[in-house]
Length: 280
Image (cartoon, rainbow, N blue to C red; front, side, top):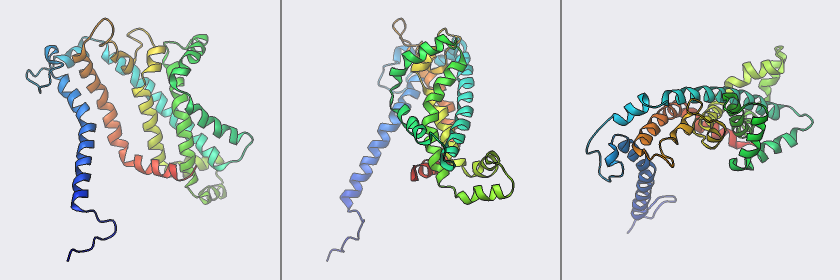
């Protein structure tokens, strides 16, 4: 007699179908970056060739690093991303803590504002933001780009941090006040060390916002010396030039820091996202 199948146990065909689906999904996810890496080592004549590397060369990387202002773009991006990440983490953490622990006039409208601001597509905001930055002299200034990136990162991160702080017992705040700490001292010394997973998610989201954003970087920064990596990448392929081999090499160089940051923060990302989603 055939053994009865236990609840939740998959049959042979189901297991095969599941594994094939996972393999297909892995292939779809890994093939584009793999082919980008392969193309970056091809000469221009083989850029669109479907074969693997027939004539291996590192001239694409040499040209990007030595024949363009890539290092200047890299420095601009590092400056802007660092400011965006530090300010984004501080503002989102303090805002999320205030929404989680205190009751004050205008609290609910503020929470709705944090949600509503995420509903506007970036393309709609480019023109009004451009006019504001032009009025205050912030065009072609790293500070102006940092401010615009904070408008993207802070609302989502503040809402997420509020949900994360809701999971931390209020008794910890009360013990801090008993020991003579003011509200900021309680937040800084007691609550913030317990919020490392949430801070890791906030920092990573702020980093990705500043590192990978293209629309604002292209609209608000002009001139090769003022471009970030996202804006500089477009100079390789436009209406005048079609240097796909250089673009792939530059894209690989841009992806390396993001991969390193993700590898460092990934152990906290799952815990932070899960904790922040349990309450809202």
